[in-house]
Image (cartoon, rainbow, N blue to C red; front, side, top):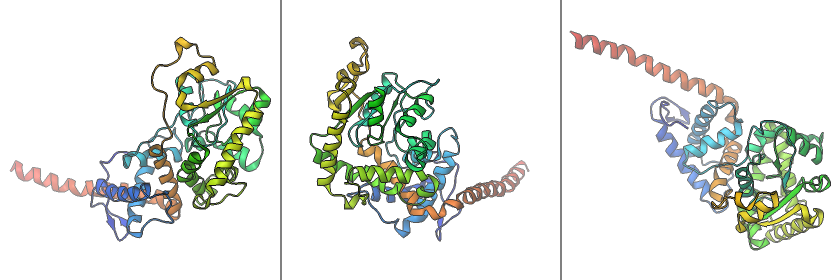
Length: 364
């Protein structure tokens, strides 16, 4: 996001063309820092003194997002806000899909926080085209997500077929094993990744990060803008909590750990051994290369990707929280952007006569 060329200030909770964008962003960073470094990422609402700064941050992000219409709105907001707040953010996979229709070859069959994002990035480096993770997933294949989770107009096999027609060879990232049974029936390769030594460690990591994001997906404005996201989040949350979509702070870690272990066992029984890679991501490239048919000599020697860290998840969680916190202002964003343009033009026009007068005076 550009931090120059736009002048903003906070005045009675509104915007005026008096202070620099950097000053406003500093206030927004204070709120982001307060949010991100809290123990659980959980807030019920923005502190009143910070709301104007958050409105400004969202407006600036929206303006930046408009500069790259090829990306989705949600993806642009996350990237823009992450840039403004100096946060790390990256997503593997392709928003646009492949160059031509193909068939899905690999399905990622694990739950969130198991290293799937790292595996997706590794497959990308091995020249597989993969469906991106959240929030890019919603921008890239939002219609198919709605059809699978909300309207039920396609089933898991239909979703896999649709991903192939979009040019994707890998899918399943952030889908909580939704596609595993269909993948087994279709004879596809399934990767079941792990990134923790125990189920309890996984549950703790899940509660502190992705579960917070699931909570936001079930709130306004997401339930209005992306109907499929609410059902998507509800199903994923229920899958780790005995069918109960409780809030992250109310999740039982023991229940989550048990469901994680049971999920992995179901996948091992469901998918034929020849088509399943039970993969500890800390083992690196060799098992993955062998599984997908990459020759030993062609297997990368660089460090195995490490993505989806808490630092990279923070921008996504923050943007989801930000939107649920100040969503009533969203309809006003176009008007506020127009106001900013008008204020900037007015400022420039006001300076021109003074500059011209100064030049005439000097010429005399």
